[in-house]
Length: 154
Image (cartoon, rainbow, N blue to C red; front, side, top):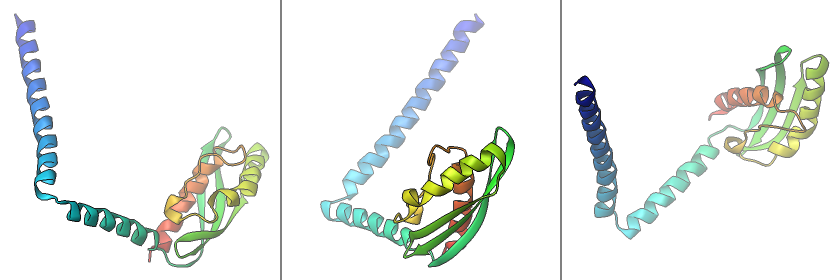
């Protein structure tokens, strides 16, 4: 007898959850369509675009340096990053390898190809995963990049 009662409770809970989700989704959609006219919708879109532009320009010009660490099969490695910003755009980048052995070779490959990946891009658009065959070094680079973003906030 417990099994049918448990199923009933589960079914009722699932139905209640579905109704709440549907009501929440429906209320957002209907209120947006009830109150929005074509002019405000266009205005909302331009506000979003303006916010994106403002966010990209919220970085102070200058050269920033940071170090990022990452884990590789040999343990922990770090990479030093120097990045120059102008109007929120990366104008120069330099990665200094700080590893040894095989990791050093991968960091050197990464350092030789990183400029092609990030120079000319807005700082908020920069996130790398694999550069010149090196995929793990990007973890250290992205960690350093987050530090630079924090420091560069205007």
